[in-house]
Image (tube, rainbow, N blue to C red; front, side, top):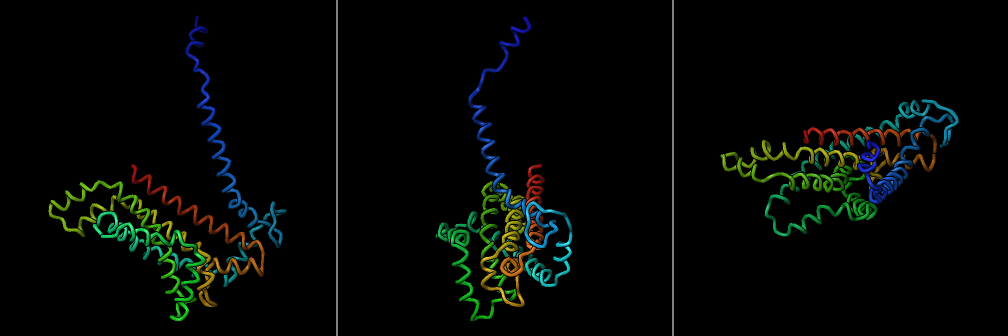
Amino acid sequence: MSETIALSQARPFRPLALGKIAAGLFVALILFFLILPTLIVIPISFGSAPYIEFPPSGLTLHWYVEYFSDPDWIAATLFSLRIAFFTTISATIIGTLAAVALVRGGLPGKSFILGLALSPLIVPHIIIAIALYLFFAPLGLTGNFFGFLLAHTMLTVPYVVVAVSASLQRFDPILEMAALSCGAGRGRTFFEIVLPQITPGVITGAVFAFISSFDEATVAFFISGIGGKTITKKLFEDIDFNLTPVIAVVSTIIVAITILLMGTIRLSENRANS
């Protein structure tokens, strides 16, 4: 009797579930091939051979010591970090204000302004790099911090605009209207009501701005100089003339920084949801 009941309660075969499993495996396979090239550089950075070798025949920290003891690599890294830090600040401020104006404001030609703000995401960076070089060179803005700050701010503002605009779309405007109707000014309403609600979007935009600036290579190739050289420009120079596992060490460090910052985004989202 119990076997009859168990058979009657058994779930029938569901082709739809099998299709979901196949789709999940297909997506997992695509993600694996996308991530695999990034993960391969990690064991290469610990290789004992004086050239790029995979799989490594031995493990050593020699190339990490080489990286941290090379003044050129350290100078390029600190220069890139300084540019990325100040680019993040400027792009976050400009992008947040632009997003508020585009979403909350009644600007004429809003669609055109939004397209213009997002154009650095669409226009190939090689075209932007050539244009910036032709514009910056007569002004003496190549190879120095201020030139990089202007160029990278222009390139990273769209990430902040997209992230903050998405947060503003989810934010209930009734809260903002309630604060204004209770006598709060525009500035106080923004800093005490709006900004806390869109903080995850601001953090997301800031993180993407930092990563994009630190990892940017095309524009850096054109406007770098002898004294102002980013880590990506140094990376490409060594690939051409000094191909050692130090290249993998630098790539591993960039991957580690990216993973750490993406974890920051996830943490801010969890805090916002809780």
